[in-house]
Image (spheres, rainbow, N blue to C red):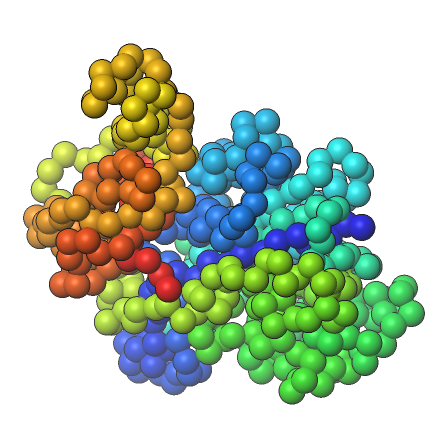
Length: 472
């Protein structure tokens, strides 16, 4: 039996009130708020967060493949899934693949993972989907789009939701698009794309999968349906014969926004958080056609409770103070650069130190047990040479040993907080702090590590780990 064996999600710490967006442009608000990726976040960092949430309690050496889906990958030509896999600290023999260029790439990756596990070659595939799309300032999409990620682990043992049916079709239809040099999503006229694109495709896919498996809308406890906006999401659900009050999974438009290729999968994670054994779920994802999946929840679902998931990350937030701060976080406007030399990148150094920088590996001395970071050949305590085991520090919590607030360092969110963190179980790191209120940082504050973007240089995105207050 092939199906989902674990799930996870990630929602950025920052939110922006849509009333604040409306105020900036003197127009109406659609209400609520949207999730906004921080200045040091992108689709890769969010995918890492969701994958770590999904792998909670799982032996990472059992993962055979990682699929990364996004329409906003930081590179046009370079695999992002290998970067995610290294940050998550998966075995180097893990098969990696990127899926992109369509809102449906998240469920395209899901189907590929299902097929791979069914083939009997890989046993466990980790799928992670993340998007960080930009709507043009003053437009409807600017209020509607949100940022986030979801992750699913697919396997054939300890299945929490089995895959009972799949139906898919493609449709060459121009509704939303973004070419190589475009910053913002473009779209055709709403009535055309909703009527002949969205509605027709989800109706065709629903009719197709119900006929194929001889089911009716009443056979499902929940329908997880991608929707472009709140009104058309509910209109589509009604047209498909589902009860909006009891069967339709809430789309979280008012708290999250439309998260692109991750949207349907994030709603699926939210549905699994509330599901019970025996529930049948219909998953529908739209984009250049439609994918439909029938899932059946099993008793094993109770074994994977306790992830942060949608519930945990929705509850942990901080409001951006202004629309201008949003423009700065998302680099939509160019601000004056710091009056100092530009950042640089040295590819051989990134390659040589990738275990320390990307996987956040330190050393544990075999003689005295001292953990140290960065990795050294000689133990700082007992002076043993080349007698170490590598140890992953990215999943260790810690406490702040000391810190400072730097108002002169260049930052999109000043002041820059630098801190020294002592890890539980040993080890210490000096790093930046993110997702923090500078005035509330204090000695012995509990923190955790988060994978973030440092800067771009020579067209290369540079990533490292930062500390943050533990998101409860």
